[in-house]
Image 1: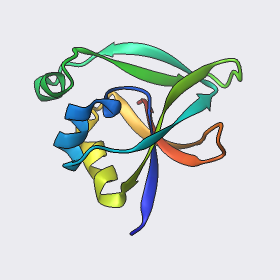
Image 2: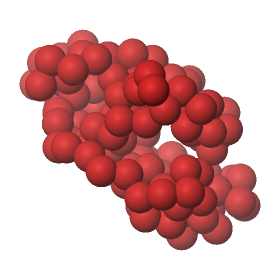
Image 3: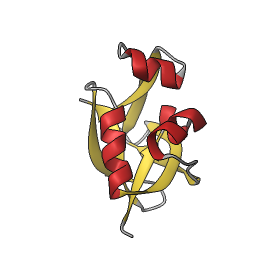
Image 4: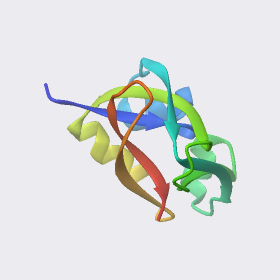
Length: 112
């Protein structure tokens, strides 16, 4: 099975979100993303708010500053699970590929 690395700094670490999206709990490893800064956005999609239990979710934005760092978790997921993640994330986010502190390449959702 081909796997994809997914870097999560927010609600994708939530067990309820994982079970709903993937039908299982994900195992991950801590990692860091440099050159991005964390902020919060309001989520208006009622289903996403209900699932995550929060009306405000974290979001990262590219800054290019090496002093900006976001801590998160890297999960290995299937290509199908990555598509399901695209469906879960609201339109305020877009998926891009980044390099993490560990040297791994991973997908991450950033401000659209």
